[in-house]
View 1: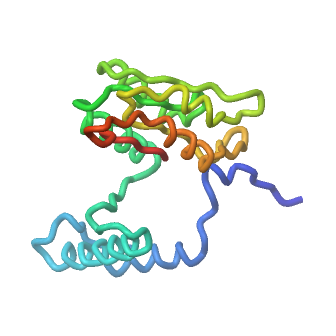
View 2: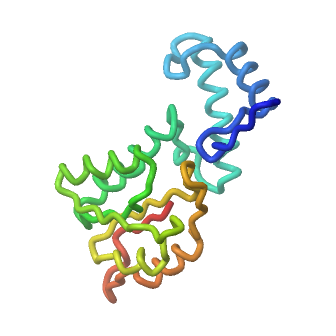
View 3: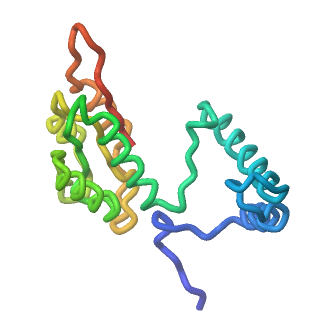
Length: 185
């Protein structure tokens, strides 16, 4: 009997085309892209730049807005900590779900130790975060909402679009200044 793997929300087997592209990149441009004083570094930097441009084109953003990280935990920390610290003068409140990935919850705990306030929204009995619960948690000083789209432990897919619409209606907007910063993801 063959084994069955049911945690593809957490990690997924790598597609053969991706393995081939990675193998080619590792063999053809094995230099450090940050060390451009030699041809190996320049070749690697050119390849990274090309990939960054390709991703930016796909996402409809600028290449310098594409940031590569070593994994999800680093990306989670960069997003939460980066937004919180960059916009601390506009607010000090974040919203996360109580069933976020441990990387998000640990980052939120550190931000609390650093003086930020974090609201943890609890799911219903089925693990779903209610759009109204997120909207109710929004305050004038809310900087960020972090919700895991698909929970890798219980398999729940959150209603992100409905949550975003509900949250957008609850964003406090001043008549004189636009919202300071509001992010969903």
